[in-house]
Length: 467
Image 1 (cartoon, rainbow, N blue to C red):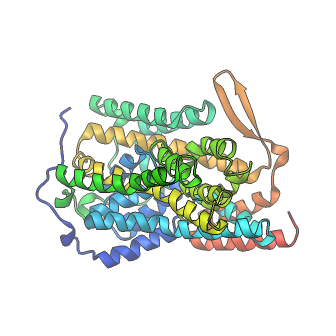
Image 2 (cartoon, rainbow, N blue to C red):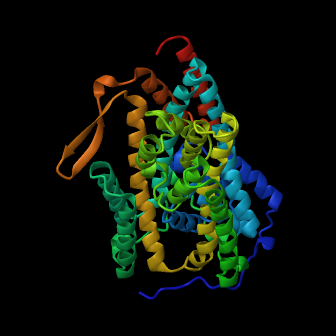
Image 3 (cartoon, helix red, strand yellow):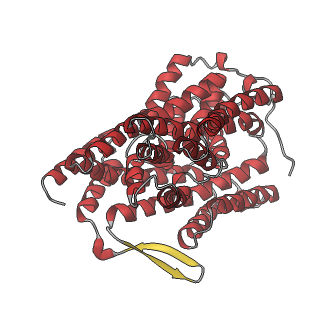
């Protein structure tokens, strides 16, 4: 099968799609404010607004960008926002979309971190988290259906998603290995032209009508600024590398390797290049290092931070901000604890997310040019299918920890998985989760309405002493 490449001309640049930078600012701010529920929920929100409502880019282009972001270390939803913002309004658009995507979550977790260290266990706050977790579980389930309905369009994609789920849920196969295997299978399967890999031009009823690239505001052809330009790629890469690593180098030279700020900068810079699969993929490692090695956190506090990240807008990897906050708070040196903690949170966030812009600005122009390459598109589509299985695993993992007080591990040969202790079911969480599922799937309530309602019910339930 001959590979094809989307022609660079004719081009429809950002000036021709008619969408102003200010309008884009408002849209990306809205996307950021609604980005709850982890990567599945965030990608679903972005798809609904950017593709279904605004019709800026078509379904194929959206999934092509998503497939690339799935290959990268770091939060794929935030990187997808950078990619789409860059497509629409060049470098400034990518910076705007990426920064706005993390800003609400950063501010929210910073405020919650202050409350956490100053006030400790507060019933109203505990109830708020209790209610929000139930809503987030329902939102993640909805997102699995939405993304799966659009990505699993052939028998091969369904089988890849199922295999990925079994591999990671039952056998603890590393996420990068699953992605690599899916990409190879999709690439060679598409090249063979086997019917299993044929993607129908239709759509599943649950997924809604698919917007073609030609009918989108950006159009089908490649924007002029999206064509690979080695000079631009090298220039922007050098700038971003300096922004990322120069502060870490300065801290190392001026404060020494044992200073808490140097440790935060170095440790989370390492995490920025190995966090394939998002927060869950590195949660256990970060918790172990932060508790046992650096002693930034006490046992169990990582889950408190994850609860903050789960129930605030933005990527789940924002939990690293909480780790940096507590690490600096408890080793403030000559600074005040809250002052040091704030610096620690900013530093952890900085070295975590600056590389995300580097990966997109360096690689996106070359990936965009390969959008019409059938075999590569098949490989990337297979990666998306595998990620559907991985996200389903995350939804089940989250559900077990929300709905049950205890889980137990099953280990038999290569089989290794967690299962809930049924007698430890949290009936209050189960009731709230079922109400949230009913509100989303049956009553079609908005995400914000369900989140707000669940938070109110959670606080009322807790303050009434019913849990």
